[in-house]
Image (cartoon, rainbow, N blue to C red; front, side, top):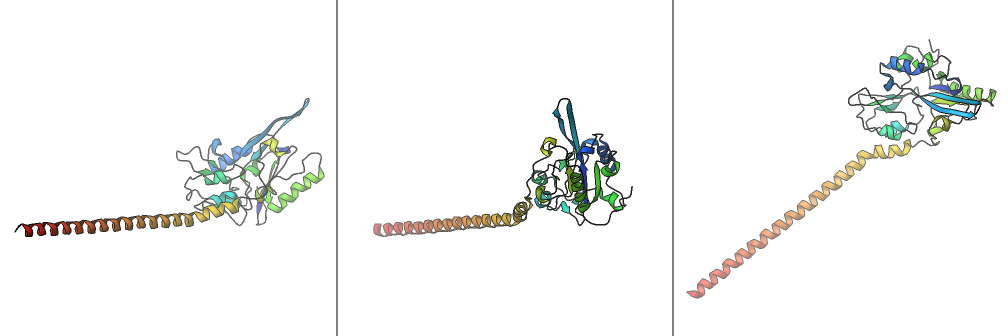
Length: 272
């Protein structure tokens, strides 16, 4: 299926009310990335049973990388394995990754995961199926979703569509587009009939911690250099003090030996 999308910042709109928990998105992701179902880049979050009897219902939602505007994972990565490109996609380079897991700690959405199929696992995350985009195709999850719960297009169009649906059916959806402001804004948007905390979504703040991450990670070489310089100075100072003390002790020993020799000579002269 062709995307027919103009070049620009891409985005997802995921409508929780459409999802039927068929897991077709998981299967398509597994096939596209040639990985097992345990290492797919998309997984499901669910609400469990909600409502009051007899009007009981449960909801599920496909969940993957939010592709943040100012990604915390990118700022936390010390080796540049994570980068946000011109299309708004947070890309991952496994050739650079050293498996430090800083990105896992930094992401407020809990997205980066370990590749459990590998003996020495690195990170796995959604990249919007870059290879498919290059061929004019939609990401595998969006192209495969039977009920159309996952919609893909330009970011601004996806956000506009989210508000259009909420405005047209205010009784169906809560008045909240998840991802518009969370963590400073993302490129993956959700709309839902129930509060997102009931789906297990993290309540991420509206300010991305990326700035503070950069202060730490970008300052690490400087701090490390300063510490190393300080330790080197301390080491040299201690060595100099030791050397001076040794020289002083040697000089005193020499003076004492010379003084003792003079005393012996004087006693011998008196004896004669």
